[in-house]
Length: 346
Image (cartoon, rainbow, N blue to C red; front, top):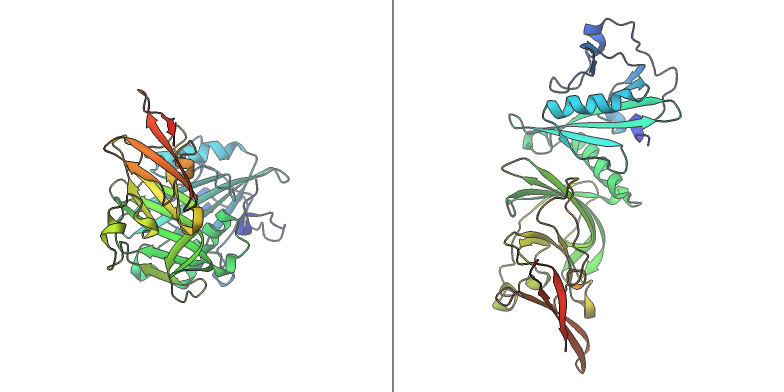
């Protein structure tokens, strides 16, 4: 896989710096002191070429190209030892690593890729200050939007807006890239890629989805909007008492499988039967690869506003509501291992 944009194949004219430069000068243009210098056998690794940032083109990264593939593994070990978080392959890059610096709110980002055609390892580094008000300039916003929207492979990239929720939710700070697609009732709905950052541990998880709903208002492409999280002031008991809130919340944490842990639930506004909302549930704990997986097994594959989550009886009822005279219910209970099974249809 080849890194996009700044990390692509370089012409000979651009591969200007060589290993002839003294080791202490090799990384004089490192974008930040906390990025590890690639080292092998105790010596800084010489690069074949480097590209500086080009802010006027929306590129704030410093990129290095190295001969061969060996550095792909060894440099990731350096990043791990330096405290960077591993996000694995993201679709656009072979490996993505980040480091959250508490002293100034900066996020250090490292993207690695291997160019098979050139037999080169490509490393791109940049600093993102989106978490600090004094650093939320258009340049940084643009770079962050470019990265997140590329992950979603959105053809409507230019319409992305950046969202940040004012309140932590379930112990996470929440940010998102959102692409408005249409209006539904009193909402704007569209595609979304969300970043949940644990405010205690710094752990990050990324969730994408569709028919994500935000308040109805004018959204200017590539601008930043802060949103308040919570039920609307006029929410009645009918909404507040429902375990899925009838689509009134865009996402929430709730123990929907009775395991004592709160799962992340994403609302798919208007995507359930008869125009109600559907819900996508993510596991409360990561798998062996650090991924939070969607719960695809029944009954979680069909949750919508007609569903009943009965924590007292530890059962979930999925209602099929074709009309007032044509309804049926499937009752799901748990076996001794906590796995749900179809108990009865009525």
